[in-house]
Length: 247
Image 1 (cartoon, rainbow, N blue to C red):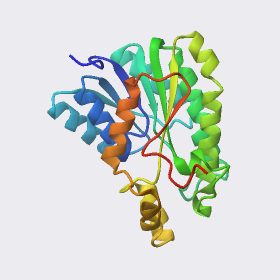
Image 2 (image 1 turned 30 degrees about the vertical axis):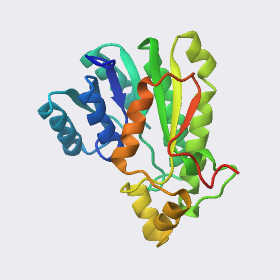
Image 3 (image 1 turned 135 degrees about the vertical axis):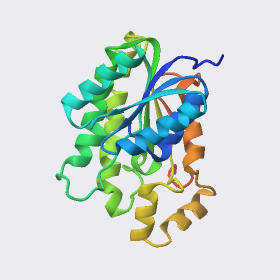
Image 4 (image 1 turned 90 degrees about the horizontal axis):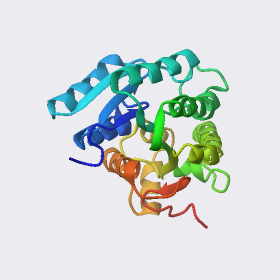
């Protein structure tokens, strides 16, 4: 049995990409995983089927975390399915979508992350952990400029990170830890592909500057590792280092 055997893990935005790979990795380690999705139920169900076929345990729960009632239902349904929450991985993010309100990035990447974390902690025991997934472009946005199209995302994700880190003292009183996991541009993600399309050569340039860019699966492995890594609450894991960001 592994350290994660029968542990209950919610992963937001896990119907594809990094979230989906993280769900599969953790389920393979014995965790019971809630695959959260906003609107793509068939895609989420495919992740669940993959986990089941490998002998793991998972369920898909649809919820737009920017809607308070849906966020509440996500937590309610997850607890009903698997009991108290051991780990919450805040992977869902966005802000480059068309047709959204002007403040959508901040609502999603700051306000909704903080609200969901607070809702989850009502059902988390001592020894539980919240993992916030972000990017170097967001984490270092106050010191290192990013592409204009990504600016609202970066600023709002940094605001979300700050809001969650401010919760660390209160979380520690409950015996709950918070870890931030940040990475550079990730090969194969929708965001990296879109930015490279808008700025041809951007991905290659960043790859040369960093020395290496992680793949979706490689980053997912790092997120999965940080779920149980022995680090203090408030720890910030800079996956692959931060070449070009730290002066």
